[in-house]
Every structure is written in C-alpha cells, then in structure tokens.
Length: 114
Length: 114
Image (cartoon, rainbow over all chains, first blue to last red; front, side, top):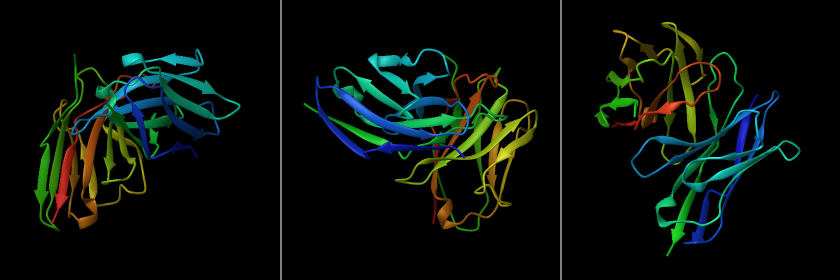
C-alpha cells in the first residue's frame, strides 16, 4: 500500500526566505509524486509532478521538488517566499495503476510573515 | 483554460436526507474521481469512474454512496441518507488518460450535515 507523510503541519517563514516543505512516501512500485496547493476557499491546484523522468522537477511559481529514491523523499522548495505563497500544500502519491488515484498527505499550512 | 466545475459550493442538509453533489468535468477527460476532506484532515479518495462504471472505490464509499454520469457531461455523487460524519469538503477531479497526466480538481462542495 502507498502512503505519504508530510513533516510539519505548520511552517512559518519570513518573506524572502527559503521555503522547504518535507514529504516522505512509501510505495511498493515506482511512484508518481505530486505537490498540490490549496489557497483559502479554493480547490487543489497542481504545483508540479514527478513521473520518473528528471529527479529535479520544476513547477509553477518558482517551486521545485527533488525526488530522492534512497531517502524516499520528495521535498518542495522555493528560494524566496512571497506573501501570496501562504496556503496549504499537499504531497500526493499515485501508483499509476488502473485508476491512477491519488493518496494524499495530511498537508502543511505555510504562513509567510512580512 | 478548461476547468472542473462543482455545484453547489455550499450545502447544508439535515441528517437522514439525500444529497446530490454535481460536477462538470473537463469535456475530453475520461477518468473521474470524488475525494473528500473532513475539516482538519487529509484529502481522501472515495471513488473513481471510467467508461460509465466504477473502477475503484475506497472503504469509505459504502452503500449509502453512489455515482453516475447521467448525461455525458455531469458527474454526480449521491449520498442516500446523510450522517453527521459526512460533513466534509467534497472534491471532484478528472484526468485525461492513465498516463499519469494531471488530475484537475474542482473548487469543492462544502457539505454540512446538521
């Protein structure tokens, strides 16, 4: 069975500081990994995805994530936080199986301080 | 840009009543999903739908739940006899094919059972 663990339910950074959101996964097959963002009162928007190509994946709004198989991690980073990045971030895994369903982590709420 | 549309955005219903949550997936997509997010918890997979039938369902998706695609455009989730614990945000999603393309999510329907 697949699972996702996000370390830190709340992360607070200063504007301009590095954003680092951690995600560890468990999968018995090569995983497909995703980061989604949820702004207040909105749906889930895909930031980026890893589907077995390059291990460093670039997404929207200058976010990127690195797939590290040896550490079973897929951490999300952004060099410089903006106030508009304040949102909840979800890591998700899929096995690419018959239905391609997503298994989500519990989410990390990112606060950006001025 | 194409998007998944969900109606209503909010629904309040009395315990024991039936509710129907509606979704219009992206028009050329083939795979459809319902997920739910109980307040403060992770996003959970409920059911996937392909070729006019359920392709996978979670243990949450018991006999009180049903899905259908009545007219080739709408995708509905029916909860037959709502319980207090059904209160959650329900997300509809669709994807184009199984090759791990992005799942597009709707804005969600917040269901409150009183």
